[in-house]
Length: 51
Image 1: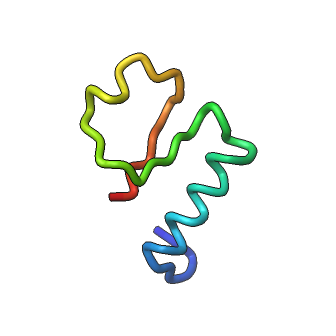
Image 2: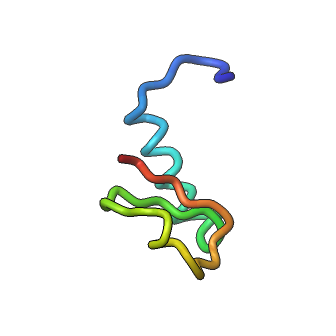
Image 3: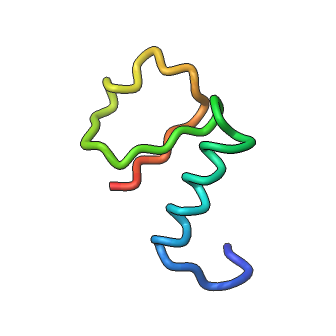
């Protein structure tokens, strides 16, 4: 649960910022049209699909 309300856009922005900052290489972020096989062999632990 969140401590305060957040829009989906705010959540996406926060996740994208972290994926480019201190979690770079661990957390991924994409807005591309993807399927699960697109991530086979990806070294990141988690990828957030914004679509």
